[in-house]
Length: 296
Ligand SMILES: [Zn+2]
Image (tube, rainbow, N blue to C red; front, top):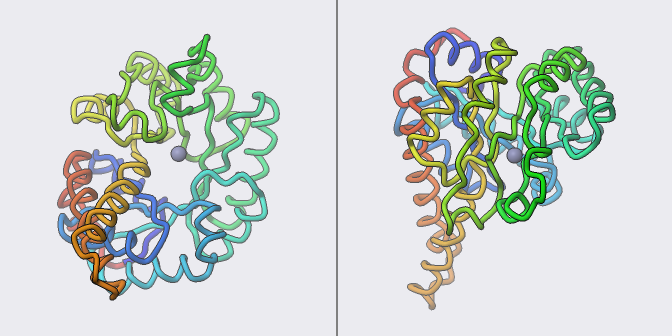
């Protein structure tokens, strides 16, 4: 069933688990994610980005997620979120299309400019009963982060986080605590998280659900420690894309004469499903969909 991110967060807070947020770019990834949610009976957030909207069109991708959520995940809650929006226009269009949550990503701008843009997005979202996520600190790729002369400047400062939440009124906050993006970490392993920093952020804004972007390749212990320090939403993008495309390359090699796209794509749907199910178990959200109120 289709629910709002607000409803999911309330449920997760009450039952003390973290919600997996999985990025889709097409029909097949959406099928894989939702089949996994049904398989392990876990609530999920499905995230879409502006580049996916350019690729698939806003209405098609929205309808794909909503229709599969309503028809295939009858008893499992699925919510839709716009991730990393850079433009105010896409925020407005997505909220009108039914997204219950948006992220404005102005984290590479100076603090004051980040506040101004985020505040605008928050005001717009709140008038239309949607949630808004902002980012303070700046999550980089593994390579950028490793090469940075001063890594501290990219990490979320707990005092800045307090000021940012107060100035913007955001509902959820993406933090940079050593989490990084990209494929590099898949080979070398994810760098350690700054758990003391995360705990300090959580203690200073205990009512704001924290969001861990770049969570692909994090180990079970790292995720558990992060969930224990205020992380309520865990974003998976890279690993999901790799599950899909690595499998697609393998299938194409194994079936060089196959020409039915469905036979080439079906194993990739299965790969996305298997990875998503693994992650949902790691996040502790297995079975949580069962307890979700059905009278929505
Ligand atoms: Zn992200």
